[in-house]
Length: 189
Image 1: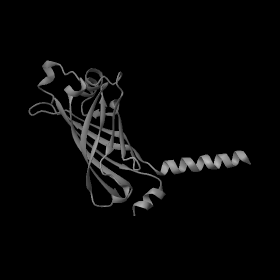
Image 2 (image 1 turned 60 degrees about the vertical axis):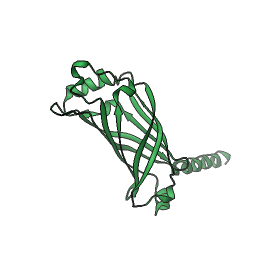
Image 3 (image 1 turned 90 degrees about the horizontal axis):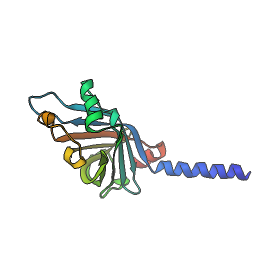
Image 4 (image 1 turned 90 degrees about the vertical axis):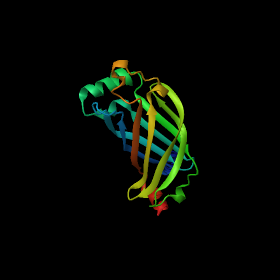
């Protein structure tokens, strides 16, 4: 009887904890470092993990580097092997706090927020501030953000002979719909 009660209490505790988070494993990051008159340098990653914890306003985004896919296989190979060294640095992580965020304020009208945090890429971390647009959608909470990433900020070396063909600042944009269990979604209505 004591074991059953303990299991029920543990299960209830995990359910309550799970309700406090919104998550997706299928957010999308588009990456572009093209320059005029040269081959397009563009990739997409459709397996981005986002976690939003409304109580603490914490936003975490985790990206597996090898999940970026380019139009050309050779470009993807150079991106992973030579530039981002995904065998040594398999993930990029951004963790920050959303300023003035309150889950009760989220509705169908998109609102602009500022997220300050630490971006870690290629074994190097940097404090950054990004703008994000957040709103309620049918399936949960949508976030859209775009921000530049400078290769020099993260010690990413681009060979001189290729340097003129690749932008030294990559434009990235993120879009994701984070979901929680139905009880959290009901509180948004």
